Amino acid sequence: MKLGTIGAVLSFALEREKSTIAFLDDVLQRKPSQTEELTAVRIIKAKHLRAIEQLRRESVTEMILEPIEGLDSDDFPPAVRQPAGVASDYQRLLVAAEKDVARYLTDAVPKVTQKDIARMLKKIAQEKEELVKSLQGLVPPAQS
Amino acid sequence: MTIPVLKNYINGCWEESTAAEFGDVWCPATGGKIACVPYSTKDELNRAVAAAQEAFWEWRTTPPLARARYLFRLKERFEESFEEIARILVLEQGKTIDESRGEIRRMIETVEHATGVTTMMAGYCLEDVAKDVDTIAVRQPIGVFACIPPYNFPAMVPWWFMPYALVAGNTYVVKPSEQVPMTQTRIFQIIDDVGFPEGVVNMVHGSREVVNSLLYNPQIKGISFVGQTGTARYIYQVCGETGKRVQALGGAKNSLVVMPDADLARGLPSIMTSFFGCAGQRCLSGSILVAVGEAYEPLKEKFVAAAKSLRVGNGLEEGVAMGPVASRAHKEKILGYIGQGLAEGAKLLLDGRAIKVPGHEGGFFIGPTIFDDVTLDMTIAREEIFGPVVGIIRVNDLDEAIDLINQSSYGNAACIYTQSGRAAREFQYRVAPSMIGVNIGIAAPMAFFPFGGTRNSLFGDLKGHGREIFQFFTDTKVVISRWF
Image (cartoon, rainbow over all chains, first blue to last red):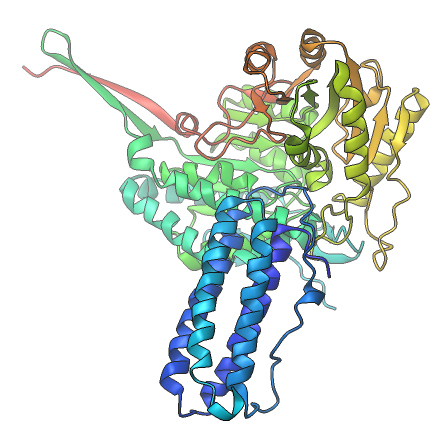
């Protein structure tokens, strides 16, 4: 689907953030050995979710009928889906999911004309790069 | 699917109406029935007013800051329920989800602004107006006020008035538009949760009978209305007879003037928003596109191309740029105007009449429609269409554009696109309408500025929100004192 409006851009980011958080919650329910580290990741992701929700609430004050070009949800297939059971390589999947969201946000930033929204998305994308590094540190050697 | 029957909110309780007549609420995107709204009785309205009158004195003696705290709580709850309210609004009104989010944001902004009551409601004083004589002027709340909002902004418009009335110490009755009553009903559920004292805020659904009962109820001290000019004029007249304060905002016929030096690349998105945002159903929407001199050819070409590419569909789908119009009857009215434009000799550059939205065959859709060669004697150039229909008029210079705008019986908004400060100043100085956009297509004053027009666009003296709104909702009492 073409993400042609600012609401569509932000809603897609929210959808991805929520699905990764749901995946992470499933992992955490199983009390893995890295619970502490993953809980820290969960807190940062919740912060990102709140920030994007706030952007959608507070920054879409006028509908500008200037189509946003070049963003399509099909170009960002989900790295994680709500699992029936959590995969054993969940660390790798989480890394992939965070990378995808970061890539999406980075792609979206230059296409968004509202500077305050673009600035915040860029900030979140940068924080996600850091998050990816943290998550990569959790991937067992055989998987990395 | 069970169709909900909406309830009234009177004296802090949800009540089923005893009305004999009910109206249908439709989803404009599908054409399906989604709720039933009671056309409440005069007795129900009078009970709500009596409850508001009963609650007045205790509320009026509550410190302003304590009253403002209710608004702080409301703001917090509105933020929590933001997306839910926005989606209900789209469901019953038809606008796009982003437009709906924008509307809810504007609604919350008035709540935020009204919390500044302790500054904005403060009076003034002067010592020694005569020997040993001092004078103070204080603003006092008046009693029960009411709001009759329109169907195009079901969330926002009641809140142009209500938070200010309440925080100033008045009590309130809202009669939502019977076309779009669900949004305000959800908002009143939040009001109920927040726990205002019983009777301070009330909502009575209904139609003409409730409106007339409000107008003639002697306990109502003032009315805020937004809607069509004919109704605004009627409400103004009746409030004059019955001695009520009144602010009645009517219709509009807004022009956007594009000068030859306009930066079209940067201006076009907001021009598009002006004409086609909310499917043209805003009292600030552009209706006439005035092309000055050499601006005509490039403007026409780019404007038509951009309008053709707009994605029309169900407003609940992210990415849709324009939703349906609000009702089947309104769609028919707009189609009538398009037919009339053709009959009177205007040239149709883009015809939105036959638009099809797959999966939404029953929806009330009209695509972007653009007429060229429009002249001021045509009906489509004079009357408010309130839909995604644009008339292009060519003029030779700015003087001619200003004259054209000033011939209108309306005076809501006018906008100019130019890179000349001189032209912009001349425009804002001389045009009659009260809300002016310079390189802005929707000249919508935010909560802290007054909203309203002139001529047939406003009947009354004080406009919506802004600092002046506290004048509407208070009486200025002057105390002149001398102590022996």
